[in-house]
Image 1: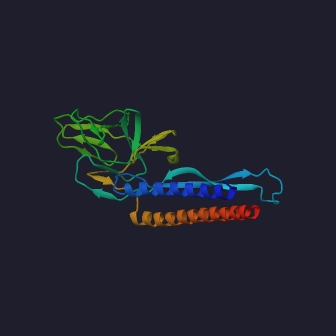
Image 2: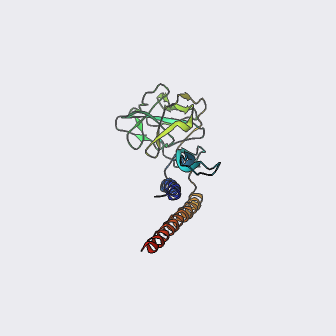
Image 3: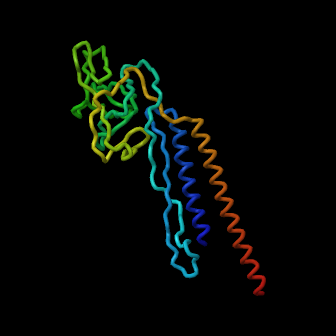
Length: 246
């Protein structure tokens, strides 16, 4: 395959990646705490070493899938009335204990487990400021959670939810749709602004994502047509050369 088709294919592969990411955003438009993903591309330069290349045109630019990042703006807050549903108005994250270690999340759909721990839907315990699960006893029947994360009942304070913020949000690595691991250090958020009985919705805007999907589809189709046209041109040249040699 010639260099022109290779360059076009690199662009087509990039557009396919864009479509996959947008489709995942749309699929999670109703996932609490989900952050929309975006793809970042860059040029990968390859230097031509053949003779006869025009001056200034020795570098060939391929499209490279460089990184995927998440938009950090908060989603809207929806009131549910459930005692253990929590929403954050700050830019911090809840910390939950998973089999793979502590993970960060904005998904505030928590509930009470039989052992008394406050956990997410997968059974991962919500951690306090000391990195320990918060335990609610059977005698604690009226649970209130303050804006600073303090969990209390009629029997007194039970703990304080730990809300943290990574030093570099761009280094968060997704594990599923709502859990994140981070390679950068985290710091406690002094005023997390927790809202009890509410959840943060996904920040995905379905209409905007649909528009982006249509634009991505048009670009993908354009590159496909270009590759087909180039293939037809090459086949035409080959056919003419063969007919002249016979």
